[in-house]
Length: 183
Image (cartoon, rainbow, N blue to C red):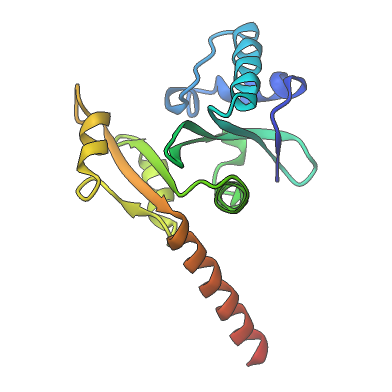
């Protein structure tokens, strides 16, 4: 489902990135294939320096379909950035990719908090965040971060995922699975 970023995936990813249903909502905008290759190389180098964590999302056959990233890592927290190509919308890849990424972040990388800033106009992403049982709208109780994101204009909703909340979700899911098997 996830693999380390590789320049070899750039062609397939760039074709998906430039779709008008995707491009306005990505953080790292590349207007040409060469620019996308350059940004991918920068991303790989930044991960080596510990500044971010980035993975390519792949489908069942290993084809690249998007990326998932933790940007701006500081104090065991960072900002999530995910995009998936339009042909893969609504097929469950977003949730599966997030589950795999959170597992890695929280249990292998010592991350405690993952923030998601989502444009209020991005209905699809806001709905996806609200579907995650371990995700909390943090506009009010993380007012400092929310105001920093929206310093110029009220553009973003702020969501937060805490390691403890995610871990509790996993334990509940395992318990529910055991109860179903026993019944």
